[in-house]
Length: 322
Ligand SMILES: [Zn+2]
Image 1 (cartoon, helix red, strand yellow):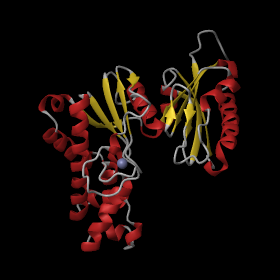
Image 2: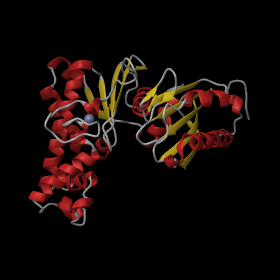
Image 3: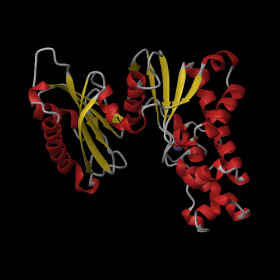
């Protein structure tokens, strides 16, 4: 079925702590095939690299292609990692990956160029190429899930900083005496607005006032309270849930305003919880950003939900190589 005017095709690899995915896509971002497996991270990098080789070969066959039709491989992986050398340094969710030469191993197996990138940066680039950031020069992408990660795309390129550490938007400190953050500091944006942080604030509030729909949704088990319960209760106008959402928007707005003053982005795209919450969270975030940020950058910045939804993880790795 091959012919000479065929589009270029690429392999994308998404390495997460719980799942691995490989896709084949063309240069318009169209996914031609996909294979997904559990990571079994505890088995270490040698097991995972062998599994990835198997998955890549299977994905290429599923797309009806031969290996020589693939032009390049993009890899989206939890950091820290070095995008130049392609070495992955001990990501917290991948035990045993101590300076693992991921790029070199893939290049020696397939003899084509391999680009590796940390997952939040890769997602930012995917939103820039295929999603809500299309057509803008300065794009900030922020996840809101178990953590708050971020990626900055300036003039079509991921901004990496001096040693691939730029974009850690979740670790700006807002409250120096605030809750402990996973990074060891106190009061980071992540320690106030990630999913677990929203749940923690909800639990603290329920200890004082248990007459809330949040508690009922968690079957009146305090340890079962999750950010999803807060969202659901807020959508049904539960007063405590609405207060917790407003507090979340306040801290998010504060954090985003800090970045808006420094970066002057065209657009800020918010993922995960912000997508699930929609206007419930986005409307107050916009209000707080415009009250905290300086007038000129606040005037232009758009604050929107990320657009790629379920395909974001697949396209993140592909965006690195198209
Ligand atoms: Zn932190």
